[in-house]
Length: 264
Image (cartoon, rainbow, N blue to C red; front, side):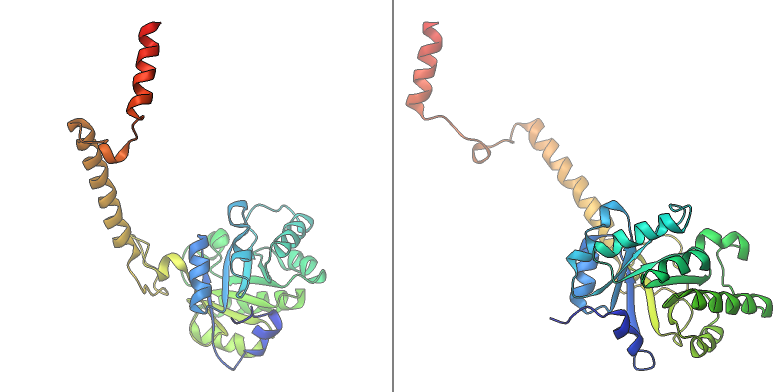
């Protein structure tokens, strides 16, 4: 069984090979990804997922600090340290370089975020690529330098033009993680829901579905409905429960009970 990659191991892979990274929402997804040999697995650090990291001890696990939960660096640091105690090897934080610096100063390995940052998308024109113009590219490059100076070890680059992302990768000491930003980054990142084909609506251009779980879930739901209908029909017809679904008292013991009832 392989051991989980450390931050030092991940850094050593730069320029050697691409790093595989998936975001999960279910424990069984994390276990499957680890069994498959995924380099990195991530999820939000929320109570119902706080045990995920311990379920996959042989894979680098990243917990993400939920956007909007922390009002300042102290709150973020407290949660980050709790997440590390729960088994995380790194922490995603979408907050400012000032907050990143406070966490990094205490030795927390931080992944920051540039490009299309969903909670901040209103500043960049909505859910679309960021960095297609000179001015946007300049802003992204400045953010990269600010986060690097703050002590982040990695940066998620979301829907940034691939040539821009590749050039930045050459010029930053941070590990670059591509979510729709091309193959020139150090790591490739997908959401499990996209990878497994669980979405029925819009499929992001950067995503690739390797299975069609949506169709499989639809099939299972139809099977649920059919099973419930069959059960209702059996109940109405009196064919459930049958003799195999119930127990009977020993006849002599039952008769003693009847006799006792009749004697009052």
